[in-house]
Length: 441
Image (cartoon, rainbow, N blue to C red; front, side):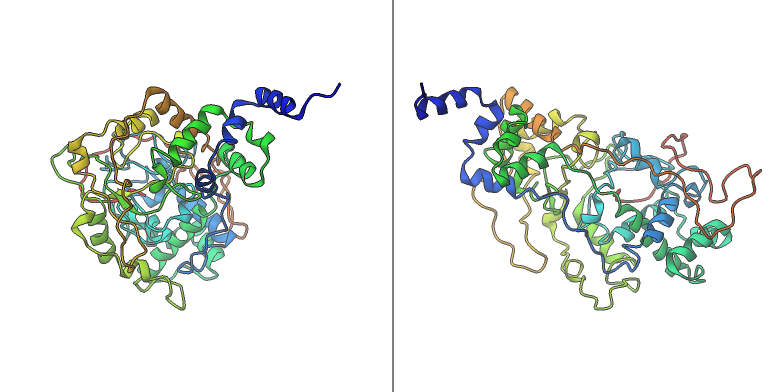
């Protein structure tokens, strides 16, 4: 005997997993908001200011530089000492520690190739300029901008690596050589693109109407996702495939540092950008048409930027605690708690900065889009954490194996150390405290 169709539909509904049942109730606006966070991976980023941005040889040379301690003043630290592969290409300390402690947390360089601004304050406007900035900071690599070019010319292996990457011997012009080293470092970092996540699989299943694949998404994560694009309105700033608008906002984190000084964030970042000889407006931009200057030229030194910091991307966020520009919040749950219970005093420090293209008229934020106390329940906080964990890539990006340039002579078999210095492991000794200002990438 055949069951009535309605009875069969009721039975199917009782057997359908919770996530699929919830997905069936997504409204049109919710579906559109979820789909806007993909697809992943996005098209390959192209940096016209870097002539070797997509060169495999430059990326190989940049990888060696990234792990080479010769780029530091005392030969003890490298880029990889703070951007540790095993820690999500970030660092598990509250603030970065190179030759001395700095003021800001170390963000991951994974997916950095897609950034529009670099550093918590946006003090650089290209990945290659951001790669050079630590050389100038006494607390990071030790203000070695003028020393590194001589070291590259003097080291046969590094000089050969440069020739392979750029097709000529290292130039005598220190400034040009330094810019090229940044461009090789950027070429390497451009290869650090995160893998797909459980969220991506759910998002794509939603796009194609695949209910069976949607049902595999955890029910608590789906509830968190609906909060993220719904009542909590997290996607007003954490939007798009990378879950960031790439701009700057105040979020109620105090600007006063432990030593009593203030970190003014984007305001100081714009000042540094304007003073930088490595900005896209400078002589080392490889773009023949100079068509990528608009954002830099329109970076305004506006008091509204005081205390605003870059909105971080959320892919892989569960792998890179602690959080905020100063590393002051230890866990994802505490981050959500910060927004859930934000006080009036903190709200006064969190006046939102309108987001618009540089040079465009900046529209008012929509009514209700202001940062506000969310008053989430414990379950809602748990659900948001569950959702954020589904942004964790299924595969991590491992530390690359050391490689030598194919056309360079090998070091003697009995050499005590590699010609290009020691390889950074992420473990460092304590160093004396030096003073400088910086903007960790």
